[in-house]
Amino acid sequence: MKSRSEPGAWLIDIEGVLVRDKRYTPVEGSVAWLQAIVDSGRPWCLVSNNSTDRPDELVRKLTAAGFPVTRENLVGALGLATQWLLGRGHRRLMWLGHPRLEDHWRERGFELVEEGSCEAVVLGANPELTVARLDAALAALWEHGADLVSLHRNHFFLDADSRRRLGPGAWAAALEPAVASGRVAVMGKPEEPIYREALKRVGVEPSEALFISDDPVADLVTAKRLGMTTVFTLSGKYDDHRILGSLDQDEWPDIIVATPADTMQAGNTAAEEADT
Ligand SMILES: [Mg+2]
Image (cartoon, rainbow, N blue to C red; front, side, top):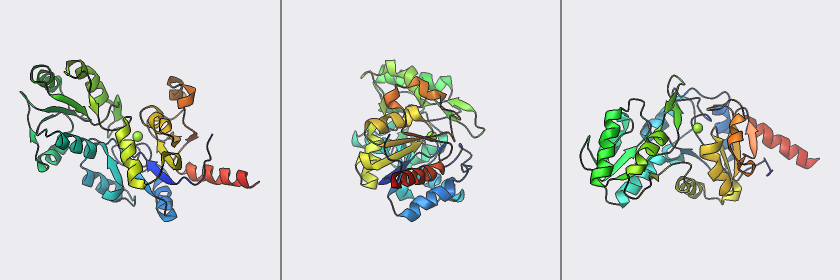
């Protein structure tokens, strides 16, 4: 196991780490924990697959919950998807994600279509998504050769009532066979680009970074493969470590904590042990 103390930089998942779910209720002790990281002067950023809020709205919600967060601290799948689509000159989109983000796309010059041809079908978490809209996406992919883009590939997410809801990963799996290229372009975790963007943001090598998340499968396997120290917190999707049974042992997180605040305790303990 790697040293638990003093990472060079903190990479932090939001839901399940800072907040419980989409109600943005802070996890116990997490506001003071993030403030302590800020006070330490070490670089940090939030690495988020959030696909239901505009980045400025996400920062506003976190600030309202007491977290010392600015837009500069956020590395998100939505931003990466926007860059990816602009880079390919795609302008006509079929957005199957949350309606709250329609303005995000329009403000950046994209045209949103409900059916017919488009250049990309884009998936995000959307608890109101209907089979009729998936059928329209199927036609756009099959008959018009659109690209399929997914903000992330999580099978489910916790809604504002903490209920498990099928996520974009489920829709991506359903639609992927209809894509001409045979594959969906995934922007967020667990694909590597968002991790590399986050490392660039904090300016450290992977071996100096600590990644903390409530999802050891979708978030931490890639972080570990890239060489980061990984922390699994039981404050979100999973309240015990049984999920680790689905991973190979060399993919297991380096540290397991009940809440993020326990990483400080773990760090202190490791430092004290090293002194003795
Ligand atoms: Mg999470």
